[in-house]
Length: 483
Image (tube, rainbow, N blue to C red; front, side, top):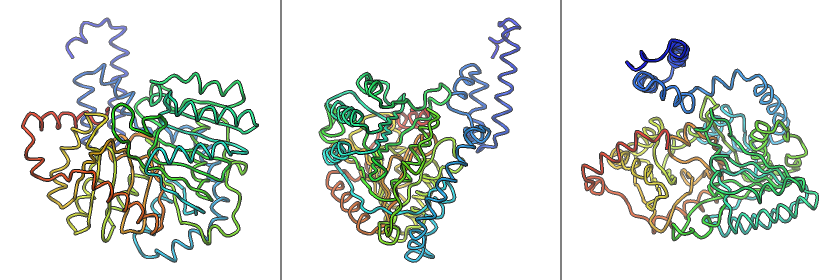
């Protein structure tokens, strides 16, 4: 820091005040000591860049959000609306307790409810789509049949034949009087032209960018949500582009998982869309007009479901904790898919504990990466898992982008959360949990089919890595917070 002595006092004094303020704030946030020390060393060794990085990637957004009165007022309003919504779905919660009372599934549901306020509801129907052709074919038909409104939220919206086709459907629906609101993550979609999408606006549609401020650039909106007429909902791993159907120029196959639901659970997807839409536009769309109509018997007969969501602004990282409860309490088996694997220590230890206790823990990630850095970093985590008994598979037929979990053939989760530190700690994510044996077994069947296209990693594979390769992988692991 000797170079600071060459600065004029009128620059040096304000800088030192800011530096001291950041350092005191960092210490008083009471984070894990390793995290605090890492940021403190960055502020000491590279003071200017350290402050910049802290501003972009290091602040405690859960505490900051608590101080935003307008956001707290809106969240209170959301809870008031959802209170009546869950009251009319009380039979679903009762059914779950009758079926799973005293088991970890009940505790799992309670964990999610207490952390983010989304409770047990039902789906009249749930369909799992393992291919883009199935998912987008069905989505086109549902969009074209919309009568009242369409709400769309995606991390990536490309500019190609698929997005052109979907945009034309949205245009036609807007001109037919259907309300269309479209939200996309600014940074995730910045590489592709949005002029065709923006053409919806003069026709009466509404288009907004999510997460546009510099201070939030490190914290993306990774969710994928479509809600149609309050009756149909979509979520899962697929972004929107032709490569997600046919693999594009890079991959022979794009393997992903999405789910289409109908019924009351669509209201939970709508609540998440409404919160992000309000944050960017200040338009409130969480009203009865956009929620599913009350069902006479759905709560008594439908598929038990629950959405769990999280973001860097949340204190509990609800979706990550739900994974920890499921993995840590599964009695027989827990199978997980994610394209990336850079876990935080709690979930990582939970996987090891489960395997050591005799649970059949399997993890599958892509063996044909789209990004080399996270793929290389993942290898640094394999040895302890393998020694504990976890089975690790690298999917080789193409790019695996699925984010799924199944436990004991009873429950399955499909959504947007990767098993990497960015999804687990930083991004806005969601997972749809379905407490249904038929859906769990369907997902396990897909997992077994994927194993046939995978290489099972062994300790011999890890030991065969050269010293140079191991160093490269370990160095990339250090960058995982920013990649």
